[in-house]
Image (tube, rainbow, N blue to C red):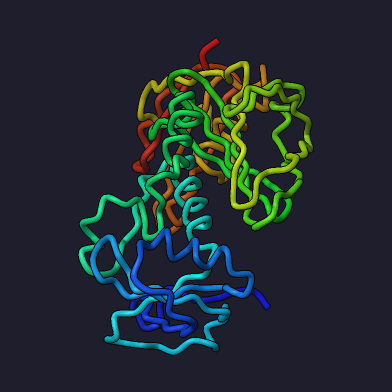
Length: 312
């Protein structure tokens, strides 16, 4: 059975599980996780905060919530032994995808701690490595850049970032949701096929195909590639609906620009209708590719529109 210790009891109460086990004494949270790591029978830890830097630590073989008790008011909380790795992966995925992640830290003074998350090791440079080796190396990771999920086989997840309005830089980052190193396929747009890229962490060259196999992606880790050649850049022109707009499809904002790129010489601009949230759940736009960069303003529409031209 899959390991499962949920962070709440389905009523909104935060993690107060007590999975019992063997009391190891008072120590830092990273030391508690380390005590579990060296015990082959340990699957989880239960802690109670003594201060923001010290917990009372117990290690336990329990890894299912059925083996734990809800200890409301007892000041206890339980984590699976691989929680720090999963939390790193979550933070990396959110950061690479353009979000500003944060972790609510529960416990005595834990909210005011400078730890990245409960269990973070001060000697672990993973967040600094993500910044220096990946995020700072491409303008595609700006918050104004577009993001698009790519199809990938389990246990992989892939996200494309595209700086459509400025540099045209493109990155593809794949994540491994499994504990063990894994190979999996990522399925790419036609406009990426035959392109070359570099691994942003080690500089290794990659040749991209319609199906690109990511080899040995670290367990709960990631691999980030940056295209050697940028994609075309688009320029915002007006908020007009163009009379030339005819054939359309609902897609993501990134998908609209990518569709134009996929059409190559057959697309010189895009006219975008911004859909109301109740129609698109805040995720989709109505995309009208235009053959030429020409827009005759149609003032009859009361909807919100944007017109972007593709730079040569």
